Structure formats: structure tokens, C-alpha cells
Length: 423
Ligand code: ASP
Ligand code: MG
Image (cartoon, rainbow, N blue to C red; front, side, top):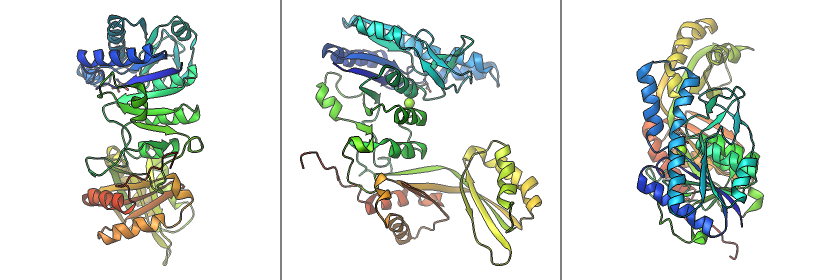
């Protein structure tokens, strides 16, 4: 007998029929003797509907009240799922975050989980029940309802798995796993059978939207094995077959990883670039430029500064699209004149493409293959940044798909390189 946490996303809970299918799937696990905690999202579109109502009332809804409202989506889906389970003959009870309780801080609309008291849930499980716990929410020290930010049910599920020492946390979603890159861009993209937390973190933060980043961080920190899999398969598919499907996200040392040096390619259009030309190459310049940007709470991603020949240099950095106008304003009115820049150039037509893989630690020539591949396609690299398991480039956005396809091929991600244990 194992303790399994299963999270179902909004699409998986999207209609009465889908909820009934979730109940059948959960009933199958329960019948096989497993203890199951289910963490559902709100039915698809429901959270958006609620937040739109809030914005129709006022352009600046009170955050505490917004959470009070948004949390109801999961309360409804959880109760419906518990009913469906009971109708299937499975003893089940649903609980809201505050009933558990899931304790969080008081940052309404983006609260962080501090602690989960698992006693009441354990008692329900020991009594043979399936426990349904609302995703996305908790309670703060005042007893007020909080929510964990959009996509927060992933984090709820992982936190629940960590708190109760679950054997695995299964994230059921509308895709069948994590792919080497977006299959809409590269039809040859492959589902990864296994990947590591580190790679998943890079892929998640680089724009692969399958899992909330905080959920991956949490799972890595508390060593919760995660599996991403499809809820759109036949709910009665045998359990062994089900656990073989999807993508297991685990620890490098615990499993045999795929033998690829680069395991995935991520990309993001959400990038804009600024350059200040002809700024003095003196101590404090980077601070004079980025200090005001940071003070405005704008996140800077990549930074590039060149060596000077004549005492002046060019300084470039990137920010997200949402911060483009504000950053431009700060540079034009404040920073540019203050540091005496000859010119401020703003460019929103850039994108970021990254190759990710833990194999990069032990292999040389990975970045150079990337650069050679882009050169062959005639794509100019504007900026480069690297970390231990990632190399990112900024390029003109019209070349994004071409770059991703070329790199996917160059790193042989089209081919299945998985080596089974008995090979
Ligand atoms: N229902 C919430 C949202 O739509 C939380 C979640 O689905 O993870 O963001
Ligand atoms: Mg989600």
C-alpha cells in the first residue's frame, strides 16, 4: 500500500463528465489498496470568471476579499469530486485549505505555505476514505483565507505530499508529460520519461508552463517524486501502465537519467532588450543603470557589458514585456542622462532560446554546437548567458521557431536516447 497524492488541473475537472472520470480513476487506485489524497483545481475557466467579476466591481479589488472569492472555485470542484466518488461507492470527504489547515503567510493573492497539519487527513485516510483537499489556498494567522497565486494547486499538491510523506505526487493534466520542447513548434518533440528537478526548474522558469515553478522547487527541497501525466486517458487503464506513462521528475542520483547531454529546449517570447551606448567605463556604472530599475521593482534577466577601448562602453540588459514601457521611461528620463549615455536603444523584438541539460556539466563543446547551429541558419546572437546546466541566447524574435527546430535536431532530441535498466 502506498500513499499517493493526485492533483487534477482545471481541464481535467472541466465538466461533470470529466469529474466523473476523475472519480473512476481515483476509485481504481483506492480499490488497489492505496491511500489517496486528491487535490483538484477549480473547473477550467472558473478562477478567471471569478477574478473578472472582481474586476468588474472595482479596478483594484481588496486582496483579502479577492482571495475569499477566488478560493471558492476549488471548494466547488472538491465537493463535486467527493460526491462523484461517493456515487462510485468510494468513501470520500472533501476539505477546504482552512479545514486541514494549510497555514500560509498573509501575502494575499500570492501566499506561501508555512506548514500543513496532516493529523486530520491522516485520520480520514486511516478510516479508509479518499481525502479531497482544495488546491490553491490556505489560511493565515488571522484565520483569513489566502490563495497561492495562479496555478497554485500544483504547489498545494506537492506540499500535501511532503507534509504527509507520500510515496509519489501525480500531477494529472491535459498533456501526457514533459516534452523535449513545445510539440507545436517542433512536431518531432519527444516526451521525456525521466527528468531531474534541476532540469525541470530551468525548463519551468524558461517558459514551459506545465508546472508552477514553486511546486517544482518545493518538490526538490522536500524530495517528493513528481510525475506529470495525462488525465485524458481511459480512467480504467491498469495502474502499472498508468505509472509508466507521463514524465517522472526525480533526483539525478536516484534514477538512470536519459543519456542526452541536452535534454530540453526552452524558449520565451516574453523578453525585451535595452542598450545604453557610450556609457563611461568606470566603477559604479552598472549600479547607476540597474539601481533605479531594481528600485522600480523590475526584474532584470540577462545583463551584458563589453570591455572599452576609449573609456566608454555599451551596456545591455533584458526585462519582461510587461516591464518594457516602465523600463524605457526610467532609462530615457532618469538613467540615460545621469550616466551620460550617447544613446538608449529599446528593442522588444527579441526572444530567448535556451538549451538545458545536466549532462552539460560533464561535457565540453555543448555551447559551441549551439552557436555553430545558429550560425549555420544565419541567426545572429545578441546576448549569451550560461549556468551550469543551461545556455541561453537572445536573438531576433522572428527566428525563434527556426532556432528551436535547428537546435532540437542538432542535439539529436528527435531520437529516443533512453537506455532502459536492462539494456
Ligand atoms: N484555480 C487556480 C488557477 O486557475 C489554481 C490552479 O488551477 O492551480 O490559477
Ligand atoms: Mg496549472
